[in-house]
Image (cartoon, rainbow, N blue to C red):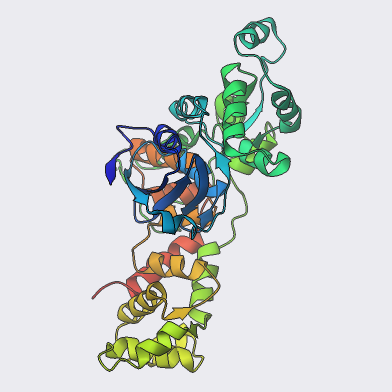
Length: 403
């Protein structure tokens, strides 16, 4: 078994190293926060990737934005190789450029989910000189014409059936030749402008507040308006693509909806669960939940009828799901339960629900830290989270908190 930190070795480099091992299979587990990720590599092929709800190339697109975290490499014995549930098929063996190209993009905080658009330099004498050093391929020009006002390489992967290695190579060449420019979210500038306006509204004798309260209604004035030429470049009027990726004007209360789905959900008892019921030493709390599930009761009804605390009941439900005693085809339910129990942080939940990308989240975290505001407030300010959801999760977490 091999263990280490992504601060010491890049993830693309590690994947490349494992892919060069002939006739061997490995499970690469990556941990950054409460939700671990997993990559399976067999005989030079990436055959599976998972990160919570994300699977295949969606998971890999997020992993390539990670520059920190811990990893564990486990050799898989030959009998297990045939049991791997494949959700991806990417050949890394002999693709020695992949690790260097991915590391180059990561250093510039550019990923497959980063919005790019054709550069103003494209076609100029300076661009022609740079393209002599790194000639563009036919598919590069295809992507340039397709980008229009701004799209991502992840979208191109779906549109043109490119694999991960091809997409990284295309993005690398386009960025290196300055054929494209990145549509940055300018999160830190917007937070700074919002903080400055908030301070200006305070009386001169009032102390400056260094942290923004998490209350969804307090000081919330909506996304701040651009007040500089740099920020005007990301407004809807100047760049429609920036509006789609940076500031959203309409945000559905996805967390509130997910919690409602969890509370109204019914589960099915599995064959393993029926076997557990026959065990006389089974925990009584687990037994009662399995019997309630067998009767078709909703989670909300079981919690309302129980004499135990809501936190204990939800924890037992989550345990039964993990052990395979009960099941439900909706994979979001487990993630929502972890959010209510405090096992998954809000930002990771939004990442799993595809409300925010890894690149946007990293920029938001850095900007919030620099400006001294809470991440939850920054998520609301920039349209990745609605105030109703923030209020709901604060209330529900109190209900399901440990007593």
